[in-house]
Image 1: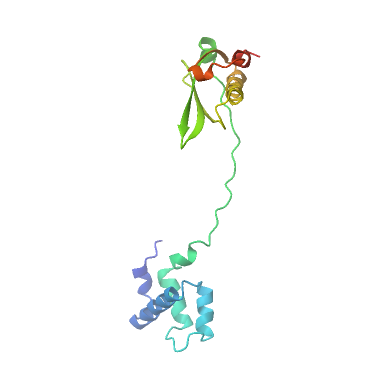
Image 2: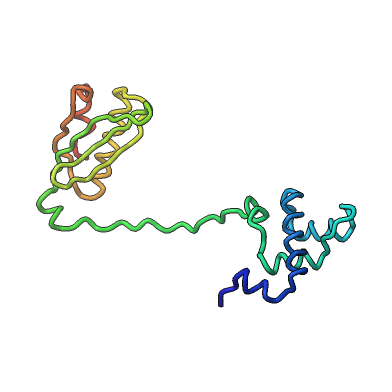
Length: 178
């Protein structure tokens, strides 16, 4: 069942529709008060000599529905329900043929902020991680995090391919399998 304005107008006379239109105009002039507030303004005669009646306000709401500006800003977004994270098992073929991973790493910048980007050869798993800085400690911490992710899935990081920025003393200790 679809209710249209034209269908709703058929229920009223032309003068009643003009009254509903006047109620809509008054609501717009008053900066879109709610229907309840508009009825109260009309009922208490707060605006002297207005031709709009409470019945005109009711007809306007029935004919045109609630005014869009009265709805905007009054609805709040409900908190979405969270879904549990489901980890898919690593395919056995992948574990069998590609258990040793060659990892490629480099930095990229978005709006001047550094991000470490890694890609694994053959698996083509991409990761990107925000880094506060490009210091040796941050690089080690980020690579350890990535290495631990691979190891948690049964894969071992065999080689790291990167530019001289990653030529850090002690980086080999981070990448050793645990």
